[in-house]
Image (cartoon, rainbow, N blue to C red):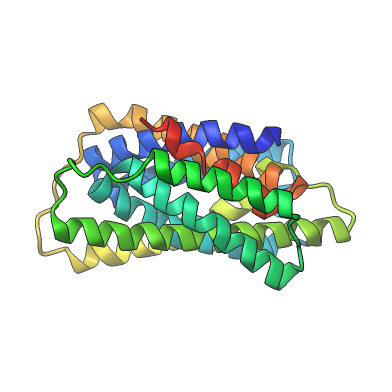
Length: 263
């Protein structure tokens, strides 16, 4: 319970930092910058005090990183500048939680009790009610629906990525290995960073003929640094800790409360 609550608080701060940095630098640059910084910081931990790039669960964490950090975060940063952090977080977490619970049940056979299901539904219903879309917000129709699609993609990335991380934790336990959240986060982010770099290079080549606006790094570097720390570094380490020690269907509804703290 404690690591899930810590993740909730940290990710709410991360969403605000991500939205600010995305507006100053553009979603692609902001996402790549915070992931590169986070990977460097997590590498120091994993190779200094953690498990590095070893363990039976490594392939599963890399796969989880491609889905969650890679595809999921690319979609997240596509949604943030278009529909804002509140609606983005609502779509991401309130869809990801039931999606992950059903996937974990069908794939890993993890069953939730009726009390756990009831509490999850109350949390998700409360989040959706508290953060219902602001009808006074002036978002162009096209940008709104593109942002919603990105938000759903972000939810799929987080939901499926979380279940794959849970599978990785089970593989580590079966192999008799101790796995800390920081090492798990490091192994995940490497694969996600590799995919993000490939997509970034590809899109930049596609737009090479068009002038690229210069980002305002003088104002953005602090937001990027803060986003890396509270998101992929400490936040994801706590999230992996929660997934290793608990059920995905229980952890994710708690984490879904993070949009409440974003504004």
